[in-house]
Length: 422
Image (cartoon, rainbow, N blue to C red; front, side, top):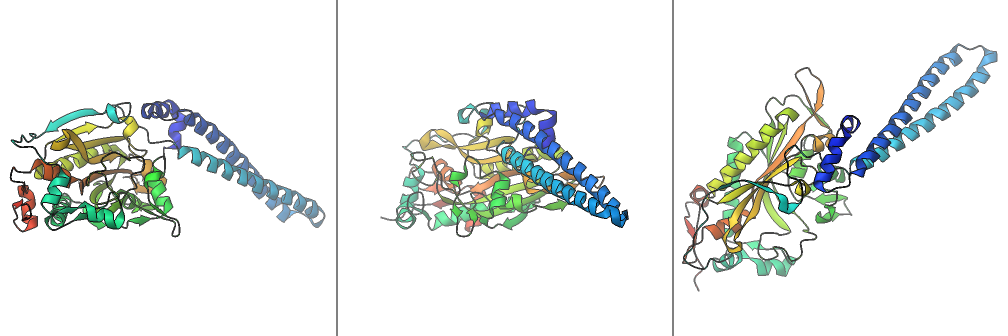
């Protein structure tokens, strides 16, 4: 949620942000209007309540002859106060409804436009050159007997799969390596709940226009999370953190669930875009003035992981219209996928400024002991999708796949995955 003071002091900045995102700018004027209605109603309520309190003293001091008349006046004042209070609360509810429709204010320098308007910041690593026709990850997975998509579909439907043998171990190795890296960097490891309450899902910004992608359990009034970011953002909701001189950093490991609504026909083959996957997510709480520096650190840790997996990649500055509602800036890191001849997103990191924390009432005490709204940031450190790039980039002519050196200790020293015997 955006600070109401910004609507009062600089609504033009929010209007410009909405336009950069391709969203409805007129909502900003609606907020300004409703905010004024609310403030007027609240002032009326407070004036009447003050009059009621003053009148109550008169009643207490009145003579018997005066009291009956004053009591009647007190009853009228009580009715007026109740009516004004209800009016102020209704105005506040209407205001919050509209404010929650407005996405976070994009940061200066974020490219305008949609998904195709990103800016490439850098490319790292050498793309593999094959002397043979490379196989895609599904062909490799079947030949190596490490991915079983047919049986996943048999028991759960499309976009489900089994990871098998060294496929399962490779994912766990990658996750454990990421967790070790995060722990060395000072992150506290958490295995998070994957079912959360509506107010937590709403607070993180996942129940807006993309709510169709979220699985909902109506009998329990709970949502399945598509990222541990949701639980991590709610971890300190309605709390005051005493010290953010050093950011509070968490690494959340969870299974994630996404309906992938609206993605029919896109990446339906294999495990690139699926309904269930595992992920290790970094999450930081920090002072707002430290958020940009923290964002760069999260991205550096992500690059470190990509380099450990020996993958060629590029970093892009995501355009405003593709940020998601909570992010003020987002960097994606995309790995080269040889059989697609393109870079595909493996990980992203977002600076959500105070947007989520304001919704979830997460604060900290500054050096003067005053409570302030914290900033939140997130970034994926490893996920199932990475197997696509690892398998395709490290495949060999004989059909085997070389294991990146950094991952081998987590696999008992295994150096390559070889095709199953026919």
